[in-house]
Length: 262
Ligand SMILES: [Zn+2]
Image (tube, rainbow, N blue to C red; front, side):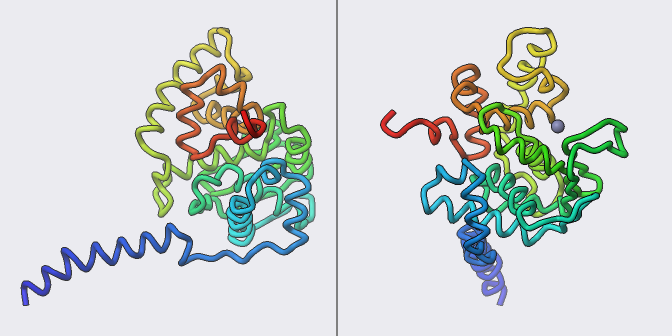
């Protein structure tokens, strides 16, 4: 009897957990509804990052969009939330989460969309977006989000910026998604970022705009904007930092954006 119990505990239980983990990782246990053709067309029309993907990766992108879109509670602040708004905000999340398709930024249950920049009740200043980890809310200005998508090479994309903040918190918040960023890579990132933040504050040359010198969280969010919109310059100027971010997010936009054959 004791032997049977030991077999159960030491062999069957770990085996069961491995099978469950494998099924979950492969997406077998969680299928989000696929996007409708018109939803797919909206994304294909506006999101350059999606246009460049192989058809297999486009399917993964769509699955992340679909899950994000269906799992979040959407609210408008002075604007009616339209389908395309949900799609485009979800596409920001998908772009960032392509390497972590099982992560849906679970803690952030509510997305609040403003028509334009808005005065934040918290800071009293005008904002294009905010992430509030205490209430699990991501706020975003629709006009600024669209502006970010219309200019894909200026390293200004408020959608990616706010999603990067959410991802940064999500990795630390105690829930099922905690710790999805590789801890050693994350530590490497923090160490390198300390040096870069110092350089920015002292007026030393840096690729990133000066706002990145605010603190670690802003540094990460700004770096993500450069990662996707100025990938080659980022890789050229700050190769070690680029390598670590690329490994953390499991993506390499500098490679993906290079013309074929180079
Ligand atoms: Zn920020």
